Length: 132
Image 1 (spheres, rainbow, N blue to C red):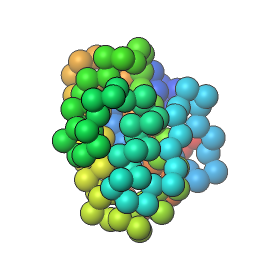
Image 2: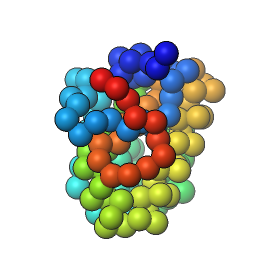
Image 3: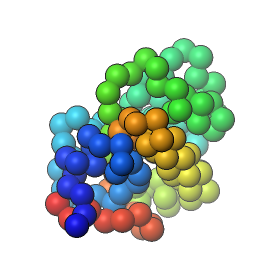
Image 4: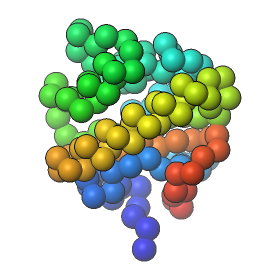
């Protein structure tokens, strides 16, 4: 049986990237990010959504480092990448790299026992769709 949206958000064993139907509402504790049209916008959006510290260097390596630190945030992390088709179409290579980094962070936090889930709305991809 597939996990529910609430189970995914709160439980590390379900960490990962998931496809959320375009008409589905995300739970209140999910941070929505939209308007990502290239590398700079993607980095800034994730950094802003997760309140990255001042030392964030604004590059892919710094994103990976901050995503596997998060010492300034408590509790589970859940992101909604709204309008994923825009980012996927505008900057496909950057989009693929962003998703790889987010998937790596989800695996890292699963091993650490902290919930970390990313929901994609729109676009194409290989991530499992959620029935909500």
